[in-house]
Image (cartoon, rainbow, N blue to C red; front, top):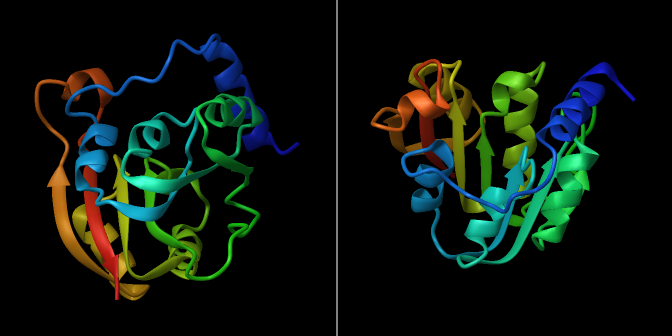
Length: 182
């Protein structure tokens, strides 16, 4: 097991007992859910315990999740998410080309060594016209817009993450962007 895998296993073991899925109003997950349209297949990259996927199931026929932590994926699986363990720093996404109608990638891109490789993989598994919702606290709009435009995406919506719940969830400003594969 790689050091980053051990780190996330420790984090999820510390979180302890699953208390049920909950999304704070105004959080990135809440905003992402509002940006998602009804479609067939959703992939949540860095799905953790499957909370986002759990709440997105009313919009999608199938919800998939990938994460580095087996502990987190055990919880996601109990929430009826179709799960795969993936270390994004070393592995490609284990799905066919053009498989998903939408992909969410919330606060993950800043944890991978090669963000361009991640965006290439998202482009590969996302259908033309598919939607990508990506958020990060550590990149600017321009950084993400450039990265997406270099890899076949058009930015449809961009938002800062601020508001009453901001201090609860964030220590620094963040961005959330909705893009479409063109």
